[in-house]
Every structure is written in structure tokens, then in C-alpha cells.
Amino acid sequence: MSDAIVMEQLTKRFGAKTAVDAMDLTLPTGALYGFIGPNGAGKTTTIRMIMSILFPDAGRLSVLGKASATESKDRIGYLPEERGVYRKMKVSAFLRHMGTLKGVTGQTLKTRVDDWLERVELASVAKKKCEELSKGMQQKVQFIASVLHEPELIILDEPFSGLDPVSTRLLRSLITEQHAQGRTIIFSTHVMAHAEELCDRIVMINQGKKVLDGTMDEIRAQYTARSILFNPLDEASGLDAARALPEIESVEPRDATFEATVHPDTDPQQVMLKLLTAVPSRTIAVRRPTLEDVFVEIVTTNSGGVKDESALRAELRGEGQREEITEEAGS
Image (tube, rainbow, N blue to C red; front, side, top):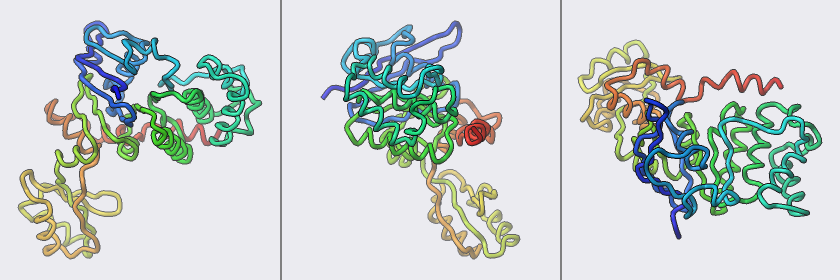
């Protein structure tokens, strides 16, 4: 079985800026890949080159065994970052039109449209114009349009952006289902938790470069834990005792507990036992590094530091989407 996508030294420049820098990447058929990184990292530019919306300045690319996506367009489903529907068309008519463009016709098309609208809880708006729907509803309609023809390769650019938690959970389950049916799926996101929950493999992009490519297990093995979460019985004296331990670099509040960061080259399991002796605690555990932690560490190492780590972490958690979600909930 051939690989779904192969990139060799793929490069794209816009004037003096290199948006994608000598990208090497192979995506096996049937894989579920996450392209992650902050806004502006190069994820969307990479996807647009895969889709032949943009053309590389250097390097080689093959998509489903062909030299470009244009030769395999009916085998690909694409949800672009820019949301767009034919606003004056009714929902069901729009979906039938999109299905026809991809070669689905007749009763098969009608059945698929009806079934999908039912599944995403939009059957009641089938006769409404697309412009009458909320942003979240329009996004569900576009997702249906991207999978209606049962493509081999599905590419989703920031599919969760602006969705409320219930819709996010629904879309996540639909992506998992499509993958279980053997389809190759790529989705990009700047929210690390989405990729961590869904993907077989993670491709981390920063400033146009691939900085990490691996499974979650491989990534966690490469980046060892350096944090201990604990909830002291006596907060005041417990924090002082924890900060006094020479193996501990810092102690900071984290949600409803505290996080102790151990010095590099220190075994966190051994420090945890020592911390528990010094600070009686209700709960204590070594915290495995998240994708967010790994990304911040990579950026810090490669660029000599992060000007505003808290702002970067907020972006990687999707906290900038709250206004969009609020607007959708009130629509």
C-alpha cells in the first residue's frame, strides 16, 4: 500500500519570508495525523500546497500517488480554514450541489445528505438558507460537504475553531469514525489538547520548520517528566518545605493544586518520594509532559527563550476562541 502523502524538502516563500522550510514528511495510508503549532507556524501553507491551492517553490510532493491533488481531487475531502458556504442556498440544496461536484448523484446523494444532517443534529434546518445558520452550524455543514463523497483522504484545517464544547465533542467522534473506516486524515490545530486526544501521530511545526514528528508515546519518551503535582495538607508550611528541597526548581499554583518543577537530570520519581516525606499531602503524582509543555520547551530551546510564555500557552489551549464560541452560543 502506497503512502498517502510524501513531501521531500518542500519549501514555500512569500517574498523574504519562508513560510514552509524544507519540509520532509511521509504520511502512511490510513493514518490520523495532527499538524500542530501556533498561528502563523506554516500549517495552513503546508495544507494549501497539499491541496494544490499554492505551489511549492522547491521540493517534491505527491498526493495519493499523484504529482498533485488536482489529479486526485475527487478522492479528497477538504475543510479549509476560511469558512464559506453559498449563503443564499438552502442547506440541503448546498450539500446536494457539493456532492454532485464530487460525483455523487441520485438517491445515493439524497440519502447521504439526509443521513448526515440527522447525525450532526441539523435535520431541522435543511430548508433554511445557509446565511440563517450560526457559525458553528455552518461549520458542521461544511464538514458534511468535505466527507459526503466518502473520500480516501480528509484534510481539515482548524476544524474545531469557534465550536462550542458539545459540537467539538461531536466533531471529534465523527473524525474518529472516519478514521476507523480506513480513511487517511490530516487536521491542523493550534490547540494542543485536540491533537493529543485524537491523533496517531503528531507533526509539530514552528516558524515553517518541522520540529517534531512522532507518536504520543514516542514524544513522551523523548521528553521526560519534570513536574510533580501535589496537594499539601498544610498549604503554608508545605509550600515552604517544598521550595526548600534542593532538587526542586520552583513551586507554582496549578488549578486546584500545586506544581513543583524539578531540576534537569533529576529523577522526578525519587523527588516525589522525598517531597511526600517533607510535605504530607492529600494527593501527589508525577505529571507527564503534555504537547503544550513539549512545544514550549522546543520553542524555548530553539529560539533562546519565549518573550511571553503565558500568552503562548493561552494560544496553545485555544483560549483566544472564547469570543467566537460565545457568539455561536447566542446565535
